[in-house]
Structure formats: C-alpha cells, structure tokens
Length: 116
Image (cartoon, rainbow, N blue to C red; front, side, top):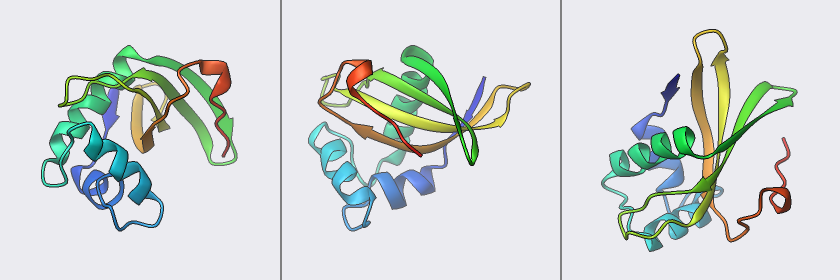
C-alpha cells in the first residue's frame, strides 16, 4: 500500500485555522498537540491511522474512496477517534491519496455516516 499525503495540503487545509472548511478541523487537531508549523507530524499520524484503523471501500461518483475510522495517535498522547478519507488512485498498486481527515466524538462506526 502506498498512501500519499502532501504536507503542503495538510498545512494549507487541515492545519489552517483560517480555511473555510479546514478551520474547525484545525482547531481540533491543535487541541491534541499537532502544530501548524509541523505538518509532518500529522502526516505520520495519518499514515498510522490508515494502516491500523477500520477501513471500508465506498463507491462515489468520483470513484472509490477508502474510509478509515479509528483512534488517531497524537502528540498530546491521547488517541481521539478520527475518520480519514482517501481516494483510490491505483487499486492494483494499492495507491491512495488523502482527501480529508477529522477528529470526531462518535467512536461507533455505525454512528458515523460518510457521504460524498
């Protein structure tokens, strides 16, 4: 499996408090010790999350998505429940790209709907 995350995307979207969509996500990530100037720390945690979380493939009009749910390792030492969504770039090569990620307080998989 070859997941792809661009530190630039993480910094400009998930770790940007002024981003119209990423801002609320950023505030939660910051509460758990992630830092705007250290996107590589969140990138590393998201790789672990993809490998250790519960994954399901969801079809969308944009192609298949991998939805990963489970605890996220954080610099604060806590493991909040998180969801990450990945596009399937090449199924044969198991190549995925991060679309989004967020921390949620809904740990039960069936209570955490995903829509595209």
